[in-house]
Length: 210
Length: 280
Image 1: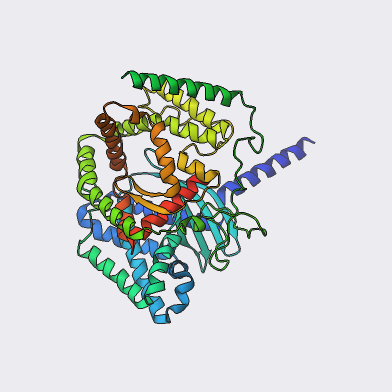
Image 2 (image 1 turned 135 degrees about the vertical axis):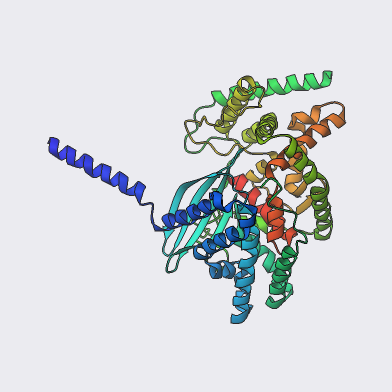
């Protein structure tokens, strides 16, 4: 009797460990990506102002291997996607992802040891939804990731405080695409990137203290 | 001064009475027998050709039964914008106000005052806004959340140096409660009111028909509104605003830079964020 209960206890323990250690493929994959980003951001060797370009390039490499830009762009264009020719699609994906990387990598550079907590993971077919929370100084910010399985699990949408990245752009793009052609939308995105590069409109997001 | 103290006493009596009522109310079962019942939450409409499995919070989307009332963030984001030209004008005004006045002031302030005291100021003003949250939660029929909010207010005011320290932040209630970050605009939404139309106010920023009414109500529940003379009241609110901006510098910039149409991006973000807060 004792043996059986002992065995049962061991089994239970193993079961507990299994669930905590293996959170499921998508979440593990997401965590690897976020940990990589945090490692780059907190690497003291890359903190110097002269290393800024290198740091940004490294962050881009990580982002490229964890985001499904095609899926993200397709969903942002929504029902207008069919209007894009294959070449325009590629063009659109390239410039849209460039705009996102440019702006959000700058934002990431303000990282100040905030901790990420993984709250919940749901998988449904080849898609996954992961709830996380980032603890800021004065409040916690919920950030959710939607992922899709290709060769690897890739992120295609990020939801910050109830605002979905894809849906936010969907609203903007829909407004433009009902009036204008896909070509002019691509041009608008390119113009925006150019004005950011020229330093127009850019209000030093990195901040003087950073 | 006398009107201030009188209204303060009146507010205190009201708060104590209501919190006593809240605490005396029986522990809520699955559904609190509240004043207002929401149509079931998380009924999400499928949008864009059955593409999405989850909504923004990770709730599985299901098709509504015939005749069922649904509320979605997509529906909220489609709030009409009949005054777009007018709104865009004030959006531009607020944008300039931010970059030319608010942000430089907040940056100077950040330079002078380290983060920790700014956090105290944030706590103080947040604690002071307790009446707005309390009344909203009571009107939403969430006495449990209102009671927790009351004990936080009492704890922080009495033992947290008048609210400078958020000493109750780490104490979690025994039973999970809905979010206490509520205001009257959200309360009207919780009752089932739609946004009406999108509206941008100078100085205040993005709003809607519904939230404008809520904001007007909130004004009377904000203790800082009762400071006499009016310019001290305005100064207190302005200071609160500068302090908030100093903790959030860069957020608006990123949204603006990353968007193709900043006005639409802010509008969409505002409406969806309000929808989430309403359902939290």
